[in-house]
Image 1 (tube, helix red, strand yellow):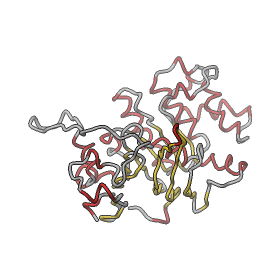
Image 2 (tube, rainbow, N blue to C red):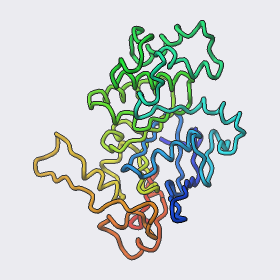
Image 3 (tube, rainbow, N blue to C red):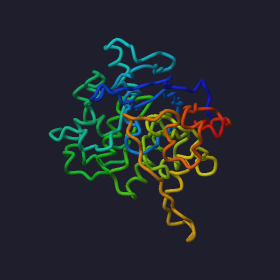
Image 4 (cartoon, one colour):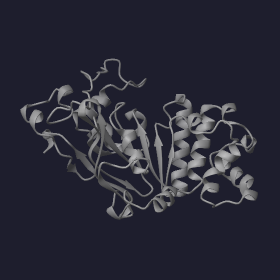
Length: 319
């Protein structure tokens, strides 16, 4: 299903650290290696504060990693000259969690949609209306929205405009940072269906950040589970419910509620609190909340190992 020749974007041993008061260091991302495959969706799931957004900000060159490399078709994009870095950003675009906050409230939809193309001099002023209509049609919105302002649209409509704006440059990789979390459940479904449709039509790769493992498993081809700055499991999307092995992934699945679940099915919360990233314990990052924690877990950090084709886990139980 996943072939090395199809890798569009590759993160190799990425580390991101920030200085903190008291001469401490906050490690937001710790030794992360991931692949983004052509035409596939990589879901990144985890609790708030685990480092998901920091990771994707590095992938699309909004932030630079402290160490490690990010390869786009085998070329390291971390150390590109500024001019080349700017041009390369056309290949990776982002859809934000709150579209209203990412739009200029004084700009009309026609200007919001065509602004990226105008910035890169890929569109003439006389062609703006035609192109904006084409982009609205792509995300199934009426031409009536052309001369509206963002505040006069619903959340779902604004998110469709955000998707259209991101795809206007025809990127290879589309990053969605909690792109559906602020929407009603019924609207979430239509946005996901739209993204799946556009992915098939344009053969684009999608990186989708989400804290809802039930949502992400419904359409992601591969899921990376993050905890406290670490990738603890990478697993095919369709195998999450039946083959997830890491205690944290299993805990996320056990805490899900469904209207289709049996009456005697127990919903279990994850015990304990997430430790401070400023005071990460030696050994496994999940040790303080894991019921399987042993002496080795407290002294030795588990490495991400392949336990079956396409499935990796960082747990001493699966060496």
